[in-house]
Length: 105
Image (tube, rainbow, N blue to C red; front, side, top):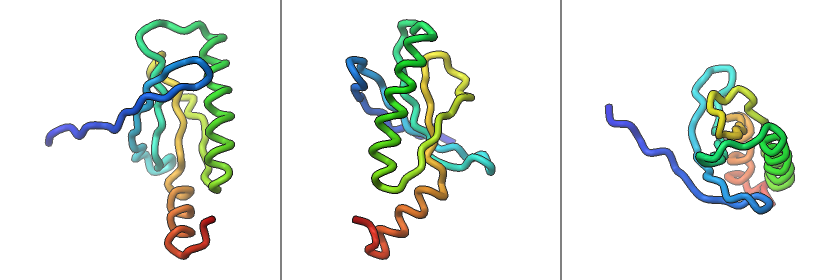
């Protein structure tokens, strides 16, 4: 089967320009949409990576929280240059159901 292309965008967090790649986690216990913030080829210090993780988390919690969407840090990403988050399938389903029912503001 041909490999499908993962949607990819460019975003800026603070003064860092990052790639943002989307994927799907099909693990039965962690089903959801993966947000993978790609730091680029240049290695980041653990302190800078931690700082970026906090900045991204704060932005996501505020924006998604206002919409009632849960977003959690994926601390098991196998890539050194990626900061990962997951939006659980249940959270997406709840949000979409509210939109369909006209309950979303």
